[in-house]
Image 1 (tube, rainbow, N blue to C red):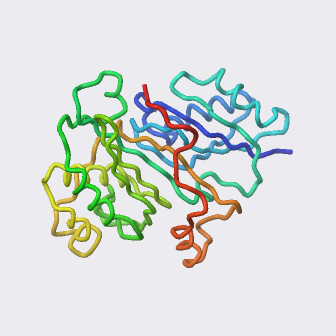
Image 2 (cartoon, helix red, strand yellow):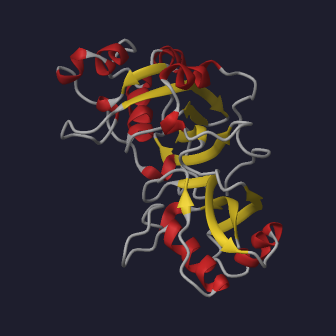
Length: 281
């Protein structure tokens, strides 16, 4: 008999080649899989909610695996943390129904991109992109508002060959000044490769006065081929803060279109980071 275990994981992505397992590369998924498999004495797949880029971080990544009954679900936190390297920590472990899938049952994901506008800070250089000068927050917020909703985000992705579905829905795009940082928080039902880093690059360009806020409409519409696509900012400034699930587990791939849009209208659960936010070291 097996049970499904859900983990909430935090990691410093600096020395990882991203989330997804890749032979010969140090990845978060591969590191977790090795720890779980060593504990169980057999190969076990670990499935994550988000395939974060090489160098990107997480405070609230969610993943799951199936294990033979034996170790109580809540004890997996301590068991794995004794094996894992210090740049990966399990924050929570619990048993979930077999219907739970960390990726396909997720209703939305919340990411943050951090831009330093002040003096160099060696304690934050690993976790933020340093611009070093002030930005026009008003223009950035105007541009951010234009990104909310369901759009074709091809110009904000790395899908440069024109293949694949790049339509996604953003629920919230916030730009906030916190001391000498500008923080861009984006909540969406799903993201295509490179999307969050290119959104941050677009808003930075707007904040620097290099392009107008209304370029958003052109990049999201038929003019995307006429406009310069935004720069992709370094992954080190990106952190996955939270992955949220509904009260009723549903595979989002199987939802009717009307049900998918209802996620966008649902405000019964506030979109906030997992746990209490505190500064990264």
